[in-house]
Amino acid sequence: MIDLIKKSIAASLLIALGNFALLKLGNPIGPIIFAFGLLGVCYLGLNLFTGKCGFFIENKLKLTDLLIILAVNLAAGYLIGLLFRIADPSIIEAATNKVATWDFSLAFFVKSFLCGVIMYLAVKMYKLGTPLGIIFGIPLFIFCGFQHCIANVITMGVAAGFSWSLILAILGNFAGSLVTSFLTAELKPAKAKKKSA
Image (cartoon, rainbow, N blue to C red):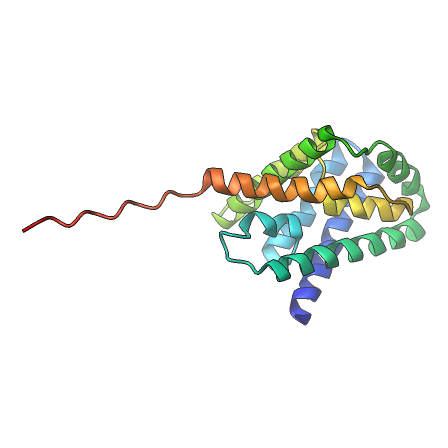
């Protein structure tokens, strides 16, 4: 349990560092540097909800463990955001403006779903031996305006605010990852029929 929590906090910190760069530098450099966060999470084997939920069934992850990862990612992410707010007040305006654009809508859910699709594919490609899914996938979802629940809660911390759209981001990320996992799952070979004597 302690190891699970430690790795979840560490994952939040890495995503927060990427998010800090995004708020500080903006486009086009910020989204590219953001990829550092997920690269670190994958290479160090850390626990990030959006990197785990697509493998929930595939890796037989316990639901309780997934929920703990989510809770720790959210709590740690928000607190780190508050620390960033103190460390560099220049990013507060960018964070506040971003949170103000989020709404509880179908469009927001779809954007979260599509982020889940990209997150699953990025991590899956890493597991298959290439970081290119992360290097290109992370800037892709940011440039497209897709919504990542952990990055969003960090931004909320920097803004010292909250948006109920976070619920849609969580559900959308989860659904997008699971659906993509199902669609891209390797088909099991059919069992050969026994020949009759």
